[in-house]
Image (cartoon, rainbow, N blue to C red):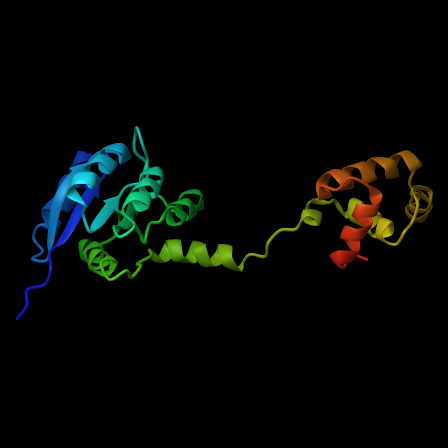
Length: 213
């Protein structure tokens, strides 16, 4: 019977006790060996060049260089290395940049030891493991409708934009909405700025293209 290949793991975390704990547990697994430990992203990059691990357990918030930047650089140099984010944070400002940088999986430090081992074994098969709370945030973001420029308009500005789309002049808009001409001009100026267009014609085109009239 052919012996399975040992999975080489690099542990990257700025807390020594976390590194020691992870290493001690992982070394009890017959098919996993910890080839090194690093306390920040820059050190991890240097160690990767000589150790070339199969999987990296990567913390996110560390001094000198964080996990996101380190992940991006490592994946650029060694795309075959799989990176598992292991962090305390579920902030979407960290989740999505980490995954976009090339991380395969995202786990929290509250994960059970056997869950981390399972993620490592899955990583060598290029199978992602995402913490349920993180997956929930990802689904929420994916399902959220993309905001349009006109979503930034006030209700009154939206009324003015609809009238612009219908070809009304400033005076006609003022008469329709029972407001002063100066007020209309202020609304029009705000609309052009928020829609990032240069003139009323472009605003009218925008209104029609987005079915606002």
